[in-house]
Image 1: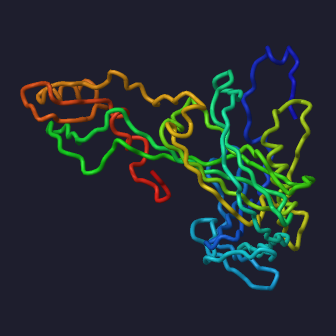
Image 2 (image 1 turned 90 degrees about the horizontal axis):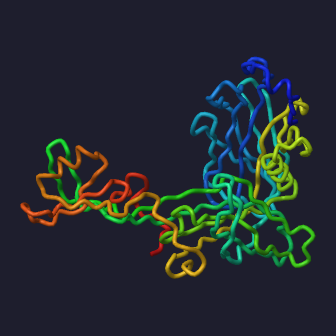
Image 3 (image 1 turned 180 degrees about the vertical axis):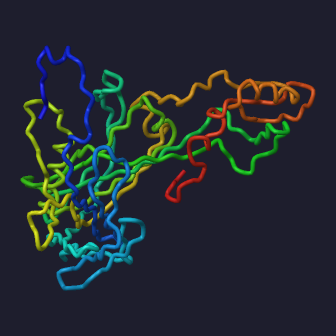
Length: 385
């Protein structure tokens, strides 16, 4: 609850915050899932840790398995401290799955049984220009809001969670074709191009959709991701992958409460969330709090590419390159390269035009000529030009 201090307290001395005065209860935190994608599935086990401690406290050497409704067991083996992986398998639509684990001190925990619901296909990904408030800029910022539509003719899937991953292309203004060695003032042709790179990001917030109460079993214009034109993401070529997780109602309600808690503005009049129970309990002591959730979900996904010149030019102004590079190209002679480099050690050789006694060496700041400095030159396997 927000505490509003009286005026006399605001003008008095500030008492140092005492970490030791904060109560701490060591609780188990579970993060695990099973989907209908053929892959190793993961369960992560750890303890909560005090506010003045930075390192996590993994739960090691636990015995972990998942059991389906037919009694089939899928063991999970510890691959890293506190992280347990299964052999590859795919969950089956309509089947229920239950997480079990036992700690080294003999405590036994299990989740409720969760039925896997098949996810319908995503119908389309599309975008629309929008202006949204920006806390950072203290004004509205323009950009593209990406949406999806989906529907389920059978009406079996009604609750959804979404994740996205995006990747965009970077082209530097002055691609460097030569690698410079300042220790002996020499340069040679690069074996790898550094003028085109790729960088990626992924969702960090909870995105939900719900068909409950909709007569046509359809979701339209679900807002997935906003991309500001203030950053370079949409400058050249952009792709977004959206994953749709089909959830049962209990799992959806759990994420909804977490989302409400995270997005609470902290007002005195906000609804107080308190502890949000998951679906895991200790079998011989159900009153022991256990944090986290075991999720069982069907997944569908869709990827779409957008090119600024072809697809986005009419919707928004071209985003700027993230570094100032205008008029940053230096034309000089071979014997002056070391001088310029000593003046600015971020310079790289762009081109050697092959004229030793005339201005024929082109130099530029690294951020304007070598994108491997801040992104990857490796083209992703999924990339389509």
